[in-house]
Image (cartoon, rainbow, N blue to C red):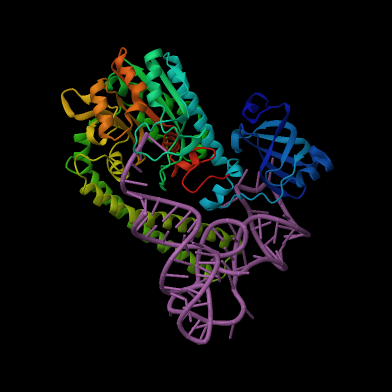
Length: 504
RNA sequence: UCCUUGAUAGCUCAGCUGGUUAGAGCGAGCGGCUGUUAACCGCUAGGUCGUUGGUUCGAGUCCAACUCAGGGAGCCA
């Protein structure tokens, strides 16, 4: 029996198999919070119901040891999950001595070193379940519409965009690169199957140390024959709506566990504002307001809010420290105060980080030069003004990839589209309509200084029955990060690979 | 690559302008108490202050270099 099935077993005696996620002990009574992967359940062991041997076995259980518990299921609204097990039998399975991940706060580095164990904690459990739901939802969305899933190669001989740094490997004595995108192969397959999507790992050797970069991440790259950029945007919006709806419908408990404010997801179920690059630039530079809000103005407001809060936090820390130092407190009270102080110090560190970064962002938004690509701070400025993702399209063709189609009415612009998530999360999707003209493509390949012979097969797609087609790439981890409201992508994937992090 | 912040007990942190034997909470071990929700109370153990060099009568504290880590820029999903 799994914990998530307990609703059908009230009043019955069942056996749960899992791990001790928490334990509290009293005289003649032991409370075990058992987790089995499907959920959490408090199990109560007393001498009366479990006998002397059962109670002793329960007392001997340590944090994260494994156990089989048999008992009567009762309903109890106060408990996590809503049920409780009154245990009659305790069979210890595997010991666990000095489990390193405690219930107290830990630092990032320590938790990352313990990632194999950290995954067992409640918050990580919830995030991984939401990630799973998002993956399922993506497959369902495309499969139901008749898209064919395809696998693009991981070893590639050519750089797709040529700009990002690649991981080089030795392929039987020849240099090969780990794929940074399956798109070009996706285009070939779309000419065979009509509409396809890839779902696989991609690799970028960027030495980025920011909250939104990984060296290895999973990307979903649909490619559709006979779709223009506007149909492409419809497809992106449909997919994102499907994901959000599914997560809201199936992951209520998980969202609650991680404390996600779902109103920000619900507001994303409307159609996304579609802005041209020109409009977006005006908003970033503060020349155009959105619903009465100014991009730079709201950031300045945020900075003031941060500084105000910083003063409050400093005052509260000082106040609590003075109270502890003045004596006369019970140990429990000091403990409580100390915990509060620890939390406040963490908040203080974050606020100080913000107060260093925000002025930089304001300056960079003010000094934004028309014609450039958006940076992380520009995305922050603009997305804070909307309560749903936004789509920015028609980019200056000079700053975008070689394969993007030019706007037929204004060749200075390329038919690319970026989807920026709200709350400062930034780019989660990049895509566009593809160039179909062989000569324009060749010119771009030369201009980007890419090896022409490596792209001959790709040019064949234009020589033999070229059709208008479009596609996009969704970064799975960035999607998970936004949906869960995480501070960093590293929590969105089981074992993150990033600059400086290869283990465990 | 650049800017910025940091490294003190198993974990999270304090240690002011250099000064005798480096502190707290959690965790661990032992004892007590309790249908408990990060329970509580008492006791015990636990440290080459990231590394190397320098300044000084004296360095956890000041200086330099290096290593590692957090955040940001660039680049990107």
